Amino acid sequence: MHALITGGAGFIGSHLTEYLLTAGHEVVVLDNLATGSMENLSPIYDHSHFRYVPGSVLDEALVDTLASQVDTIFHLAAAVGSFVIRDRTLQSLRTNIHGTENVLTAAHRHHARVLIASSSEVYGKNTKIGLREDDDRVVGSPLLHRWSYSEAKAVDESLTHAYVTELGLQAVIVRLFNTVGPRQTGRYGMVIPRFVAQALTGQPLTIFGTGAQIRCFCHVHDVVPALLALVEHQGAYGTAINLGSCEQVSIAGLALRVLALTHSASDIIHLSYEEGIGPGYEDLQRRVPDCTRAREMIGFRPLRTLDDILRSVIAEQSRPGLTPTVMP
Image (cartoon, rainbow, N blue to C red; front, side, top):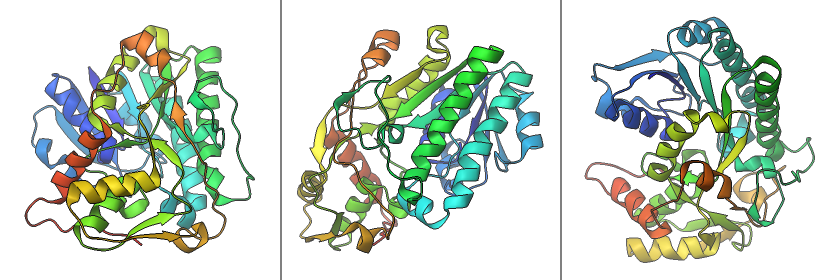
């Protein structure tokens, strides 16, 4: 496989890059390092089958050139994280919509198959236990920046589906449910690395809202093999597929587990959404996936538990010489 990974210096992208190289594939990474890091690529930077290209998915000519050199594209580049969406809403919309359109156009022109990374955010406020791919979206006002990411990902999915049905593009949409693990940073609002960093540095763990919100977290090492399997599965083209764990935990319960596993004496404090994230933010009370489609299609079953995930993040942030990054 000759693969292009947009956003390949990011959390998920760098793990996917390593996985593909280990499997013997050739990989080109396109990343502007807006949220990614060259440190994420340090383990494989000198690999003979790896090439890094600095740049943005908004550079239509560059995306087209790189797409002409590969047969498979993993489109992971996106503006992500509640703090990023809050602070750079307009730029985030442009990146997440126009960037995807550039990738789809180039993939179609050069006959490359493509995986589009979407998000469980498309389900919005739908609190059904076991969200299936054909369930309704329930989203808030488009005038709240909180829902701009969800809207952008929904547009990405509609664009992808149209390219498949009208133009014959070989493309699959993957809806990721809280993929976590080593290399994920809490700098942009991600809760597990933020809680771990706070616990390890003795700062209070900050919960936004009541803490009763239910989430499911899936280890990146369980997700990455599924990305490769899905882009190679012709039966997946034109569909959206959930990838995540069904192990539920409240945010308050997550904080307690982090404290227990880090043996931290940090306090837990609650902030309103306006205090912690700012005005214009709405949260959802539950998000639990049904991954039957992925299981039936590629045998997807997460192997790692939430405690496994937390231990891996704690181990990374406890490395000698590393100072955990803490955000408010």
